[in-house]
Length: 470
Ligand code: BES
Ligand code: MN
Ligand code: ZN
Image (cartoon, rainbow, N blue to C red):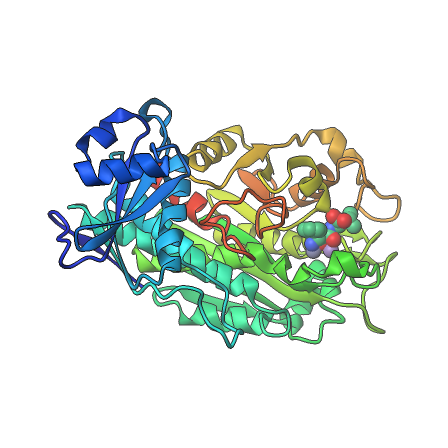
């Protein structure tokens, strides 16, 4: 799909489908031609948010996009209303859509981004392909750079979705390695099981012991500036069966999505390369399956992590924190980052606490967390801070090792973060538990820009965060 900036008015002779913004109230109807006004009034359309009216007029078909009252207008209202209208004309079989953006800051960027993420569908393995056949999006704007950036962020979000949606026997650590190496302008280093053993990465070694697919730590470096890097770490469990602490079937069915953190990190690296961002980024993906087997790691095992700390395994299903611990400690030692951010579908407890609406945010640095909240408010990707007092750290102390890998059901999201805090030292660090937001569930808000399956949570958020830090 192509997204292009077009300067000047759209000509009806050239554009069959035209989207036009429309605030609630009489001003819009007053401007409309007499014919249209009568039709829209008969349809009961008055510009309410999240509604639209599709009517033929002249040589074109217009989709009037309701944006609600001007005083209440927000970027999120725009995203929801435009994506719904885009869907409406896409379903009519539109090949080209001409879009007039609403009057707002960054309108070219937001409109392009919204169009890109709305038209993604995971149809790779379906014989009956896409439900719609949009080939070109034209945005009426002089801001060609906004269109370029907005569509790049959208396309990289879709890339993250596509990686995360892969079935577990295809979306393997090897596939992530291959895709990382296809991104131009980044340096890729790959570690395997022999390296985990040699380097003392007991967490990755333990979890990957019974994996059929070769496990990988994939390290990607993008050097767009001389500053100390931002380190991004992603949980990439390509399938989480729970291991010997086996999940029940109902809990296992969506566990191909346990690689969403790694997919987000990969998408952000691709975005940095696509837009030649002037930032220094290191992305680490901790990739392995978590499977049972005669050679699997066991409850009762004690693993020694990269920074020398030992952990007692209570549940082999609390595997995410084990692979992240080595990745965090290794990345911090090797790259001396200014800040570290990890993405992980880490706990069911976080989903219970925050639903499918917010990612849980925990960390050791107030400023960093405040900046992420600020970035998140400009996106649909909500984050909500959860506590991480030292008392949570006490909850995971062990009699036989330095720490244990679960602290029981109470405060499950917080004790998981407390585990990770043992591997970051003093480096400013934030953990995002995206277990509830990385893919859609029936309880996810029904918005047209979130298709079934992986959401790509994290890509836009980090783009905004990096922009704000300039
Ligand atoms: N990948 C899961 C977390 C998860 C569960 C994400 C459901 C999304 C939906 C993680 O590896 C896990 O199994 N966590 C356990 C931890 C427990 C054993 C301490 C959990 O949340 O139940
Ligand atoms: Mn698990
Ligand atoms: Zn998991």
